[in-house]
Image 1: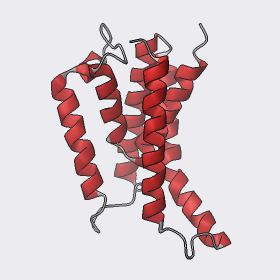
Image 2 (image 1 turned 45 degrees about the vertical axis):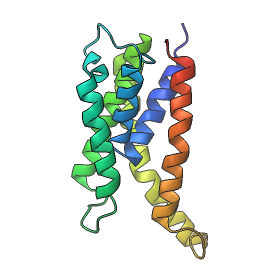
Image 3 (image 1 turned 90 degrees about the horizontal axis):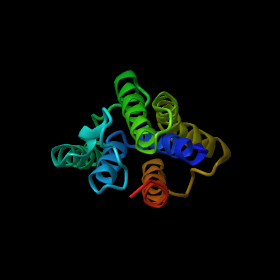
Length: 165
């Protein structure tokens, strides 16, 4: 079986984790809870439990609120970046485990996606400022929010269409 789409989804969920570290685990937990991602019999089956779904959903909402506070550290500093890499790796592993693909490759792709998602907006913002695109347009936080909101439905649709019911 060709697992290319599974590996692309593992990378994609990693990018989502890089943008919002708790949104990716919430999406994966909900997919597993709704049996769109079958994790039964794997080490990651705990993601499908109602308790896990509730906890990661609350953490995702809390992250959205806390991200607006002025004391929130940069996503590229050591602690937030490591959290994004870990959640990206966990979610990439879960997607690959649900399809029977290599969990090690899924973990690596999710972690790489976490780094890309963390540094991508900063690099894009620097490029926009250098070329003048950042002036008069949307602020960096507004653009980042739009990118996150745009990526989530695409990932959810991919999970819904390609993962076993």
